[in-house]
Amino acid sequence: MDLFAGPGRYQSGAVSTPLRISEKAVSNPVYAERLVSIFNDKAPENVSILRTAIAAIHGIEKLKYQPNVWNEEVGDKIAARFESINLIPILAFIDPWGYKGLTLRLVEAFLKNWGCDCIFFFNYARINAGLGNDMVREHMDALFGGERAAALRIEMEGMSPGEREATIVENLTEALSAFGGKYVLPFCFKNDKGNRTKHHLILVTKHFKGYEVMKDIMASSSTAADQGVPTFTYCPADSNKQPTLFELNRPLDELKGMLLTDFAGRTMSMLDIYVSHSVGRRYIKKNYKETLAGLESSGLFQRLDGSRSGDLRTESLSRFRRGRVDGPRIRHRMDGVDLEPGHGLR
Image (cartoon, rainbow, N blue to C red):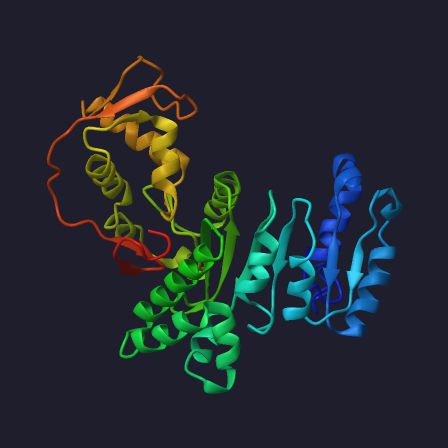
């Protein structure tokens, strides 16, 4: 489901989401039999062009369910429409030009049924400016919630740009979680110089599996990684950074300290360690495998059944050694900004 579908092609002529998805479904018999797609745009001319482009796809008749193309403005009316019906498992994609139409109510309407996930573009630059603009207060309140938006405006006074961004993303994450999005995962896009955020791509889901799948996709799309830990940022300037500077940031060492502190003396399955600890942090499964294997070889982590090292699929129990962890207070990083635990991805 794409609520801001456009005409199906970018100005460059490249196909956009509706045509790309439809073409993929035509080429895959399983998708052709099961996919139900809905594309919407408020501009009648875009809708007309998109319908023509979809009809021209070779083999489009193979789709059991032909694509639905709507012509509606995204707002309370369309949110109410989805609130009133039971949805099959869907992936909703919301890509507004700015922020109009993007509301907590709309996201909640998509997530209310089983198997439903939502991905949306968060235009940070425009929303950052909008929070201080009384003319768009209504839109900001619909996105963050009235009370949260009011408190956010006060909290951001005097903050540096980096602190401001981290605070805005954290508040959005908390607002989405309060509206039923148990797992929220942001991915940051920087400008060509890497000194300013353009927007974030944000996943909201109720199930860890959806979170894990999207986390792996975002990790592979990151343009940099420290000790194999992805930054969850696309930054064209990363290729120009000096490797020596990357080495100064050692997130796997931080992960080791966190695991020893958070799970000291506890006995639990390795899978539970990964699932419970990875949410809200930029570590992926292979980072936990590597770190746990290192702790095991150091005698700080013990398997109780002798299972193979690094096997996170097993439900076998393991135990962390109880003891004091030396070293400085752990701080985490998101988009190059130091954050205390609780601020978005850590």
